[in-house]
Image (cartoon, rainbow, N blue to C red):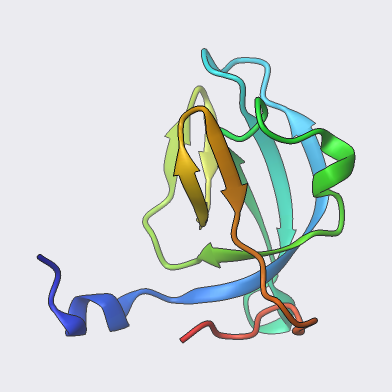
Length: 109
């Protein structure tokens, strides 16, 4: 179990995907996403294993929920600077999106 203080340590923000590229060096189908997280945080690169579930065009300009205060992780030679949130299992994934248009960088509580 995770205590509530640990949960509150997560910084979850709204980001807008501004670029989607194939991550060719990855063993699994992955994208390199460029995500605008607003003025305070700026732009980040997020590597996501959602290529099998989304076409590039579906992701462009989509607003998503991202954890922005994780330690960076190198995935197949590329540094991922956050994590997008998604629901589902390996065979069916849905990226979590705000149900109203929120500015980039808005905190998710």
